[in-house]
Image (cartoon, rainbow, N blue to C red):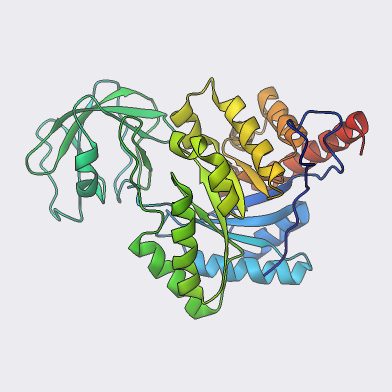
Length: 375
């Protein structure tokens, strides 16, 4: 297990922007998510050369070869002489769409969500398009007509029309233009959370890692709401591996943000997971919430990761949005320890370009702030 020492902030500092706050400046490190465009050993070796120091396994995508990818990451880090921080990102019990053909919808189109774990055959169309959602049965008590169901970081917004007696959920598309696909995760902005941090498939995957002798450096916990979620997950993972593994609390809910100090106290590090967090707190509130979470984690002397949509436009087009560059500058100024690249390194024609650009901007901006604010 490799060590990671975050930059510390003096206890008396109340803001990462204060001139007297920094004692040292550290360029934020880069976490790459492993996916189809960054799984081969040679590609990962180039990513390390470009600046990657962390790798994330998105365990919500059950079909991906996470154990094989972990082996590749360990080997690539050892060969480069720059061991990588290996993070297993557990998805919680929040459902994701099952295996399905890409579904292109227009506003007003009707769909019917069904649980393939409870009904193997699935519903007939009857004018609505069926969408498999494993685990839906367990959510029925949390849903009601007029509740919203968000997918793809809120870019697809459905409204529940009816909860049928047979466990089906009828809904229509309120807004969104992108297709609904397999493995799109669900967010329920109008419902209680109540998600389990570790699920039976998670335990199975963690057990496979333990049997193979591969212990992650970090386990990230999704959609937590209380410090007890972290404490209980730590105990469960200790039982699986026979040793402690560092816990990273992902902030994605209002409940978690409201109890941030208590959660940070029992976690080993945090992730500002801006996708779901932005939906939960509202987009206008997100910048201030990010600022507070980074500052609170740094005051505790623990590493903090800022994640989601950092360079997605650049990944898709090759032309960085000016807002993306400003975002990187803000992250450096807040003195986060790590940025997490998601789609930029998973389904991207230019993962290495994203890593290099992020590294260049973060380095330049950190040095600029170091000169401006002193050491």
